[in-house]
View (tube, rainbow, N blue to C red):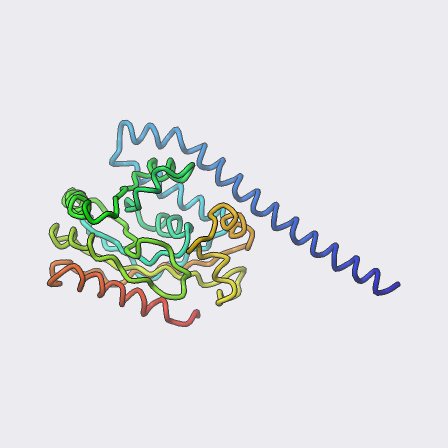
Length: 270
């Protein structure tokens, strides 16, 4: 009889836990949606009449979203005050955008395919994301576009890996767009994104897949799962800014940034 009651208790606890996780994901997604819908008309008006001021509301949206989604953002170092700057970072999760965007007012550079995604594509357009085509035939055109934006003193944010990784190591940086800051005589600042803790416990090999979205993982199921894990501590480390023209070619510049970010990512969690 005792064993029967014990089994019932275990099943009840498991069911309650799953129900709580379900509702946590639901309310976080609901609150994020309500926040976005509320700010949407203001962003449309600003984009229509004061486009240069649009980053203010975008940054506010990311800050508020980080609270709604349970993200605790820690910052080490500081972004350069130079307006003509390209920031380059490793890419682990869709949370990267919110984490970096809540600290750094700037325009993200993303693959062209994102512009056609439901919901995410619309949000990207409203935040003035710059969409690029990755084909080799379009490479020169993309470099010239980024170069012109830098000459206009735009602050741009690039994930040079070209895709998100499992968070264990940094994938090789694609060097083509590094030509733009060299031609524009701009500043390049590497920054490392580290997912350090879940509910106060260090992120390890088993828990990283809960946060990192990569490979053939389906977006919506993974997002739903990530929203249920609790509080996520993300550390963003801004490294020393460098003048792009110091390097002889774009590959050396890309490798330099990759090495700095990789070394930071390999450090043990405090």
